[in-house]
Length: 79
Image 1 (cartoon, rainbow, N blue to C red):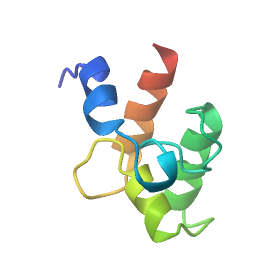
Image 2 (tube, rainbow, N blue to C red):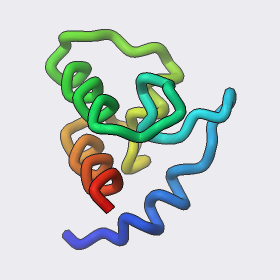
Image 3 (tube, one colour):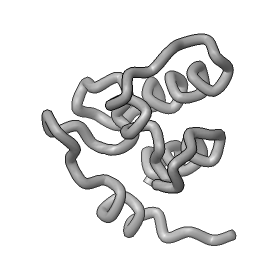
Image 4 (tube, rainbow, N blue to C red):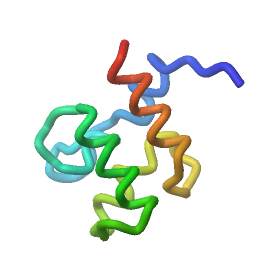
């Protein structure tokens, strides 16, 4: 499928409580490859996420944290 990542960023990238953005799972106020790596570690069951981190990790907004969220975040970062 083809996605418009600009609109995903502005739609899904709305600030959550404490001004964190979707995808910013390490909560450093920046969307970086470190966030994508941390989501991959969560998927591989290497780290645990808080409830807020789970919300932030659901980059595509479908209610599930999976590799699609990592891919979407990587594409957002690359733009």
